[in-house]
Length: 341
Image 1 (cartoon, rainbow, N blue to C red):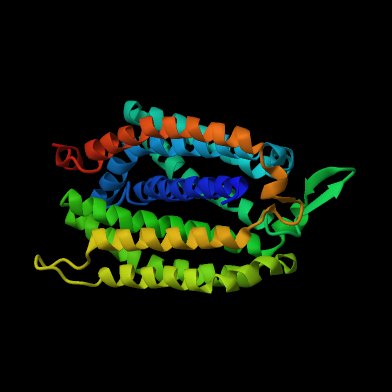
Image 2 (image 1 turned 90 degrees about the vertical axis):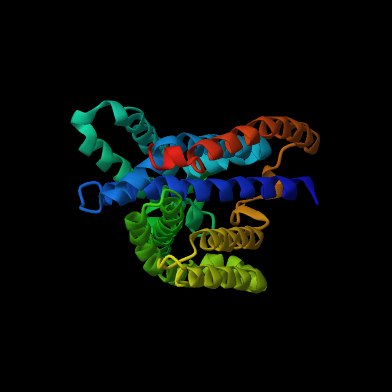
């Protein structure tokens, strides 16, 4: 495997991890807002109980991803920073506001409702801004004037593919978070919350698949290259759909205790679904970072420097992975925390 291909594979893996953790983080904030003043308070409590420790871990992976982009593809940063300045800048600003509110969430009862609303709405707006980056990379929205790249906001904001990408991102975020919180509620033995999140998983799953298929149909004419590549990877996308159908089927199985749904197998299958789909989409996107202006080879750093950085990354993850495992044991498996005993 070429060094540039290995680098983009690592980046795509980090993007997958952040997309899953971000979906759980932002989705939990949204569900916490929706049920915060509802009679189904247990759903809000489960969402907030999960959200309380995990938002910091999510931000760690975002930082690692951004640093990796800059270090692995330094010759692409000029183009990326010019084109993505507004969506990424607004996303970081809202993320800063959200993080600040999360810090004071448990120490300011007077502003509890405001904090809940801020967490919920930013949990929708931030993913929408981040997902809006995807259509920009497809072609047709970037022009070069006097040697400087420029994002054509008028064309982007009036093109249906932008809004279909946003709908796809939001439906995916809510589906992933709902099905995971269903499993989280099962661990806490909160069956009211379990039934609530199962109900949402049942309708969000098919909606997210339908929107994904419709989104491809709204690609701009300049994106015919990636449509052809997606068709070439039909086996991988078909496998992803199969994982979804298996996971979705687990939601209907009745258990001996009378409750419907096998939450853990459903979460695993949905995780595999999105893993296969993301890597297949990444393969279809090669060799471009932004079509047709820059490829992974154009933006790649010196191979010798890359391999030296890999050693640094390996040492860093060697430290982080045990810490993440300890975090998982403390907050996602410890029944004393889950039940707030």
